[in-house]
Length: 334
Image (cartoon, rainbow, N blue to C red; front, side, top):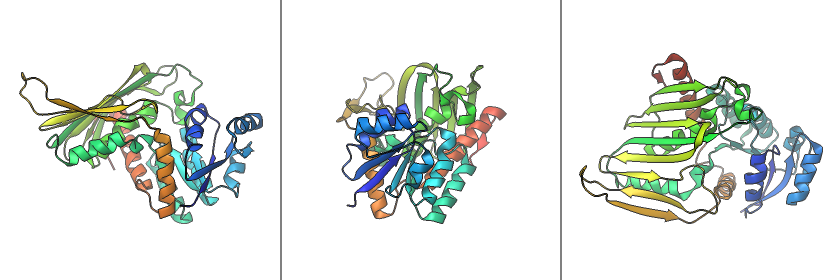
């Protein structure tokens, strides 16, 4: 397998804490460059991690002839512009979620992909943890009967008003940041797209970003509901309900690389009967390593498991949820 040369846009804390350490552990890529808007920061990070090149502008990194793949973890409003620049500079792109600010922007990326022939993918790292593939496998096998419902929760407290996640013009807010996780995993397990959605959304009075949102996704086979918040205590949970059982994930989204993951499989029973439950455990792993290695394999094969059309389906749902939050009514996903 060809060794691919990667570069990272941005010197954000997310990149420094999660992405750079993971990429340095990958077998089929070499992290050769990073960039920052501040030259000193770029050089300090390059020295710290032993990275060959430090660029003091995003454009300089994108234009670098020594790079095959760009990882884009910039603030949300910069995902599409810089990903398109990278593709037009001859680079494949792995771009953090959400891929875009709306479905229209996603279509611009699809057009750039078709124009350049470069691969681009939305980086939903959770899809690279084996617990999620196992959940879908159990549902496919009929372990819980017919899947008809899902329910999720994801919350944390974001008090820094300077953080881009608290700035609406930069794509801030809870739905973009964390609501996409229960939304995407519901799609993944139902293996369908919802036809319509409903959302109740509250906005922070100081920042005007959505800080509390509850949503219902109406799939052909059933319904998924979730709540997300950036102003509540930390908690995460996801469960899937079938006609004859349920599957619950206690750590479905933020899965630490040094912690085991576990899913609960609940069987059928009468309402007053004792629970019939079993557990499956997964050894600790770093999802970011898995994600990068899978992208390298996709570049080698020339085909992605989750192409930009998948990201477009995600953005159409998010667009409809925001429309519902304004209208107070069900909105079709189109």
